[in-house]
Amino acid sequence: STLEAVGATRLGSTLAVSGNVGIATSPSAPLHVYKAAAAVTSTPMEFLRLEQQDEGVDMNAGHGPAITFYVGETGGSDHGGTVAVVREEASDADSAAAMSFYTAGDDSAPTEKMRVTSTGKVGIGDTSPSYTLDVTGDGQFTTDLRVGDDLLLTSDSAILSLGAGADFTITHDGTTGATL
Image (cartoon, rainbow, N blue to C red; front, side, top):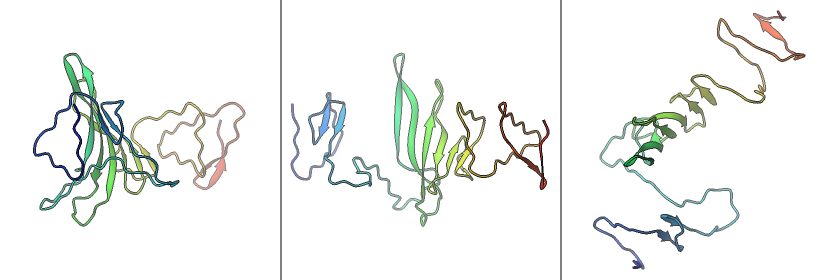
């Protein structure tokens, strides 16, 4: 049947629905939310708000609202991953937040794999990135890796492999030269 609420409605317990739920629309998915565009703007339109308040509680760094995903498994489902917006500092005076992405292996708890900080730094395998892109572990580029300024190799045994006919300059301790 249909549940229609006009005006403020507050449910005091659980509402279980065994079909699709539509908000401002006839649903075509388990949860379908619709809102028409208000104007031509580049600002994202809020469709869903997950809000957490810390009244009377000092929230720790890493705490915040999340969306959790479960994947199918024989006989049920298992925790597959989470997208969360987490507090970066424990201080109540600092509301800076990072977006964190967690994934899980088979039958294991999800762990954080990527973070975008409040300052726009992205860490892959690094929850405290120091650079615009900070990757912990190996990386592979299937096409060109373009460097706008200097390429800095900090390893004592750095290997640089160049294709045939490539132009390059190597500067070491202020001296320009190349060894092939």
